[in-house]
Image (cartoon, rainbow, N blue to C red):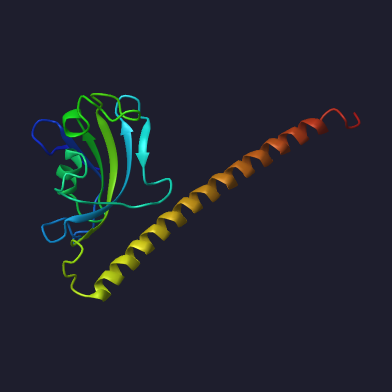
Length: 186
């Protein structure tokens, strides 16, 4: 969608927006430091997926700035808004460094994450404007997950229909070949 943006000034964390958020979407802040994300992490060198929430449609939650995730995520997620999907490329010094994270992440690995910011929330115990706001937020999250699951199901159905159509065409060709040469010559 856009060019990659250097978030750290040294090329250590690059962000490319894949899907923009709605203009009025919220972003993480001091009052909303907890974030929920979907992601898929791959090794830049091989493209091998080492971690994902997509397979089981789970949400990963963490607090920005708490040191619970790699530096690149703290940097990149601060720049995102709910609904945004971005590809984040992380040099080793903003990821797992020279040690890596064996066995999945080798030493000195550059990592690539496709991250979707699903929601931002206040810390537990902080006041959310009301219980109904929180309920609405959870309902919206549920709806988004259901829509994503329905879209995946629809894609699967289309692939299966295409396979069936291809098989039918092949079968028809085979039957047509069988028919040739068996008829009476004039």
